[in-house]
Image (tube, rainbow, N blue to C red; front, top):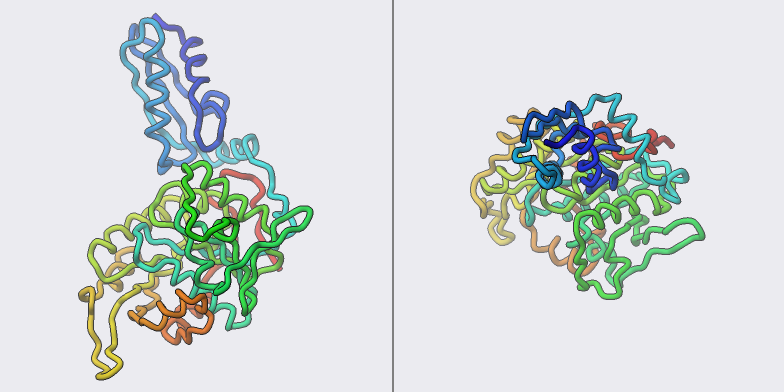
Amino acid sequence: MATVEQVYEALRGVMDPELGRNIVDLGMVRDVEVKGDRVRFTMALTTLACPLKDRMVADAKKALLALEGVRDVDVKLTEMSAEEKARLAGGTSQREGSAEALNRIDHVVAVMSGKGGVGKSLVSGLLAVALRRAGYRVGVLDADVTGPSIPKMFFPDGARPGATPVAILPAESRTGIEVMSINLLLEREDEAVIWRGPLISNAIRQFWGDVLWGVLDYLVVDLPPGTSDAALTVMQTLPLSGVVLVTSPQGLAGMIVRKAARMAERLEVPILGLVENMSYFVCPETGTRYDIFGPSHAAELAAQFDIPFLGRLPIDPKITELCDEGHIEDYPAEEFKPIAEVIARTAPAAKPPAHPLRTQQSRRGK
């Protein structure tokens, strides 16, 4: 029969993939009990929404079943208290970014959906352009590491970030919007970034902490599809003011967006509102409006989560042309102006995440 000491020793070989330390040293192992050939214990997570929990449970069971005399392993999951999370963040925080102490960013707004193809990057770009036109200092952090499209919209002739002895300098668009994206670092814009989750998460952290953003009123974060590594890193690392959800009229898109909304709720990130993209098409010759993808359900979706419905964006071939040419800043975006005004008016100041991975997340001010 295995001993409690042997159980702890075996579990020291089980790593938290994101924090890079074993679950015993992280204080995640609780209430170990050995009865005959059965081992039971509780694993305390920083959040029960952790996408890596199944992997850690499987690794723990594998490690314990390798002990002589162990035939069955039962793992109960629980969530750490706020005090425990704070202590954990203090003990496992990564280094502060080389530029983090030099940056002052008032509002950090993430744009997400959960589903690809609904126009998150377009909404991110239009939001940045509208805020800049309103006189704000604006940056765009492209967190879609494997499918970046932001640089294509803003730089017709390509661009490269600059550098100082201590930090990376974001590329600056024609109207003064600061942009950082993995595509600005690649030799060719169509070069594939074939990275696993931890590398993607590290890149996003570097875009936040090692880039000299300087003084910004708004930093817009363009998230990739899904509710896993990239979205989790942004929500647990960056001091978000809130997220803007993007959907399209199709029922499937609405179902996936609900997943993203539930993720934001679970991680206690404010939802600033919902935007429906590709909502309709207006024939330029007749002025007739067509619901190409079916009737809109965005207002009902927003009501379901008790969040603001910010508005609908049409299908406009002109915006596609301008984005392809790198001239998104030339698009009038009249339909988007009131949406940006609501976001600017309602987005709270940046604040530390409710489920932090780091300690260096002080509130930003001018």
